[in-house]
Length: 134
Image (cartoon, rainbow, N blue to C red; front, top):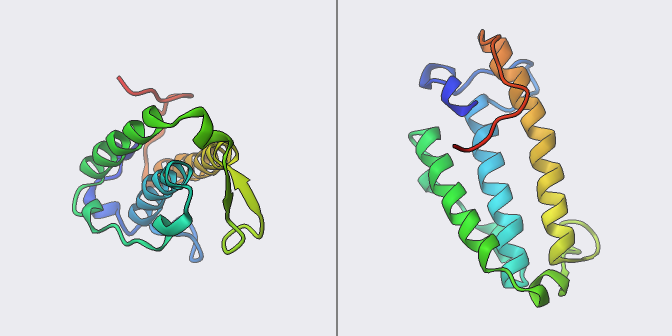
């Protein structure tokens, strides 16, 4: 769906209080990576990082962050998935790596629904029910 958002629509917002389309995509890409990296590292320090490499192309950013995220997920061990991580500063509690991955997926699903609305509002009406890599 990212391919349907061209540069002229990066700042499109379906409502005044919505994130601009480019920011929404960037948020989806970076936050999923941050959840996964936190599960791997055992520390939420990545949540304080800035990610400048997302601009100027959303497609390039998606490819970059997808690759980085897959690499980290592929390297996760059972111990890292079971380890408790102090997430009180963000979520008010400790969470395991597995719980962080579940939150990452739920967060992604939520925003993917948002993205469908954005892309429809931009004018694309022929959208797949599910989108896969491939």
